[in-house]
Structures are given as C-alpha cells and as structure tokens.
Length: 92
Image 1: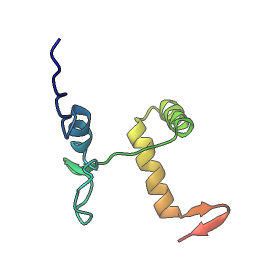
Image 2: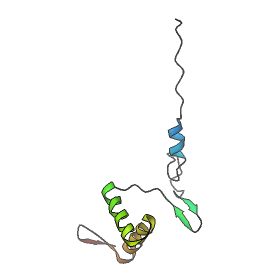
Image 3: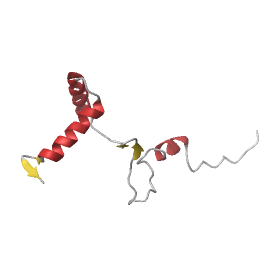
Image 4: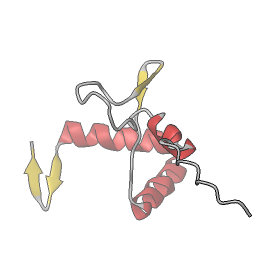
C-alpha cells in the first residue's frame, strides 16, 4: 500500500456558497450596503424567529385567512404606528 499525501481541504464548501448566496448572508459584505433583495415593489429579507413565536404567527395567520408574511407585515406596521412597549415602558 502506497503512502499518499491527503488532498488539501477546499477553502469554500457547497454550504458556504449557499449561505453566502442569501440576501444577507455574505460575511464580507459592505456594512453600508442594504441587506435585502428587491422583489417587485417590496424587499425580501431573512428573518430569524423563535419556534414558539413562529407557531403563534402561523396560528393567527390561519385564523385570519392570511399568509405568514401578511401577519408579520401587519404586526411590524402596527408596532411602528402605535409604538412599542418593552417591559411595560413605551419605546419611541
């Protein structure tokens, strides 16, 4: 059996390529550049959300007959228009 040198590992893997292809996934991205993709009149972003909260969003969406995105958009809009409370304190 011959002894051979191991092949050097590739710098980037397929997973790295996939992640960096996301709208806000590039690690070396210019911090001044917006992190979104334009989709018609709207902008697509990546959102990370806790599973219990997402389940509540999905339940409300089903109850209202709306999409998940519609419920999230409505919640953000209402929060910005009406103000937010954190630990009972209003936030400007």
